[in-house]
Amino acid sequence: MARPKYQITPADSSFARRWIEGKLSNPAWLGADRSWQAHQNLVERIETAVELNAWCVHWLDSRHWAQLKNAVRAARKRAKTDDTVSVTLSRNAWGILSYWAERDACTLSGVIEQRLGGKQTNDHACD
Image 1: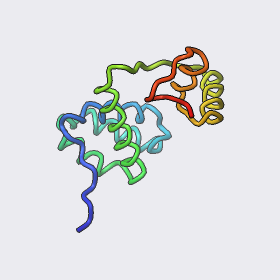
Image 2: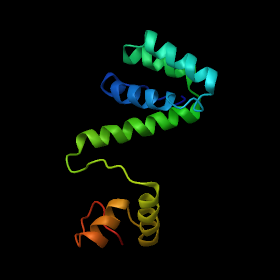
Image 3: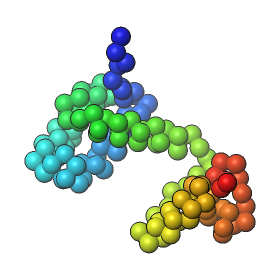
Image 4: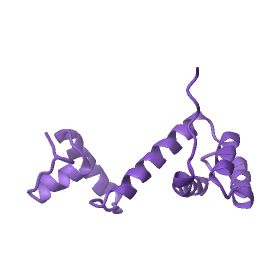
């Protein structure tokens, strides 16, 4: 039996909806005409997880479904975790942190904790 396609649950529908709306703000995501039509369709009709799933089946390809699934999983994880915060970095700061994270084989948090804080935790520790 084939594995069923990912289904957005009622608990995850707000995460999924926010992610979709953010993606639709970039007309290039589905193409200018399709993004506008998809956004109109989303705004006019979608209220439940069942309707959102139907919308996704119609508008998203397998690559978009995979992105959505990963975004929902990450949002779910962030919602359960009390020890994380979100920050906005300049592209240059992100590049610097990314360079050191790759060099040290760790996460961006690990770079900050190890190199700037002198603190090392198991969650974000560098090797």
